[in-house]
Length: 325
Image 1 (cartoon, rainbow, N blue to C red):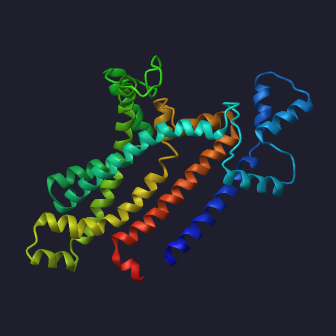
Image 2: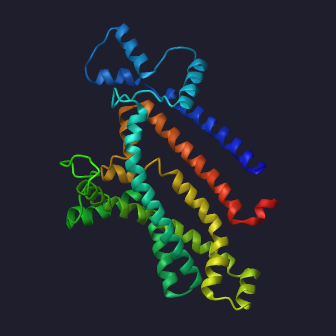
Image 3: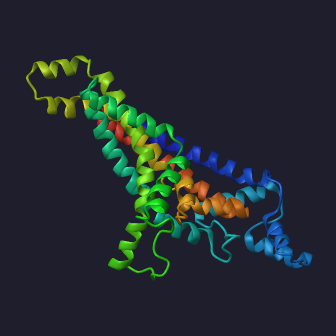
């Protein structure tokens, strides 16, 4: 419990530090988003109206330390301001709507990639040196080496434009009304196949390589030799002796992947015009929508820290030696 409390205090301090950077970074960028918005529209406002508009968006003039304290207070009260691009919607509504799409897409792809990548890594390590091992290893390294934008464009060009088997974009058929019906859910699943294939292709290689290397490092340990000498089956030794201990570093990789879920896959979502958090962040950057950018970065930071805290707890459960450390 003392270890977990220390880690919790550490992650809280890390979140405050990240929130501080998140506060100062946009203010170091040149330009005022409100001025830019109305300058591009060719609109001229009197100083009183412009000041009122700044108050509406939360750009309050005052000492920097006072703005910082107000910003921290708004974080812990859940008030992230209003979006500039999607005005008058609050940032929580904009991100909340995109959150559903990102979690359904990225979450499913991460779980599938982790499961298949871990199993492939275990099988390849157990049969190291075989043709299966060579095929899996080369394929996994190739998948992790190719940039996500290249994979997205190749998959979209082959299955979307050339063969025409799947839609080229959007999360569902725009002609359908969003509803909890079989027709709409089927359209969502159909439109999500290509982004899902792209993400799984990008993610599965990393899990496979990590698990294979961890397994190979453990197969020569004394307890593995002892397990085999006791006459235990290969399946039992592979899964309960080798794979369980090799899983610890892979859990760290899973935490990083989970932490990036709420960040969305910016490249994949932009290529497929998928309405997730990554695409929202891209549109916010183009529009200099600082409230949305700050809110998105805070969500990514908080998710990453929570995922790492869960990994710390998982390590204690998976490795009994850490309980007495």
